[in-house]
Length: 122
Image (tube, rainbow, N blue to C red; front, side):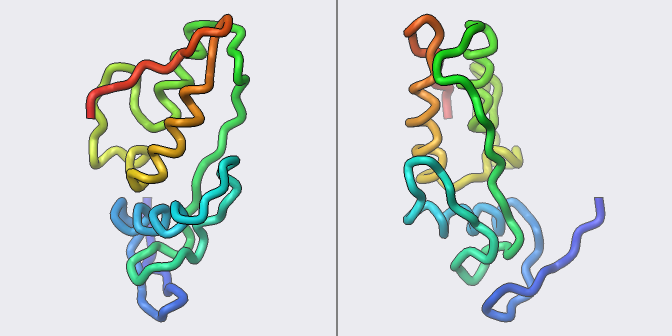
């Protein structure tokens, strides 16, 4: 897919690569509310890609299906259950503080009152 360099608020042309979208996410992590309602468009930072965005999903807190609950709780941070996080996987590019905040929420996903979360090796 073709991409373009986009001029940031500091006048620098930024390439849309993992590092620059991660920089945009890192800029938002400091002030991210508990419900994740934050925009990383035109995020602070000299290397932040100016038109980056998070993806939001709405899932049941108490899953009606254990298999789906396990899938959601492990894949929302960008990796299948039991797999190692790859630094070049686009969904794994969020800064570690953002991932930590997401994981804290994901650990609240349950099936029949039991957590669905299974941590993976990093």
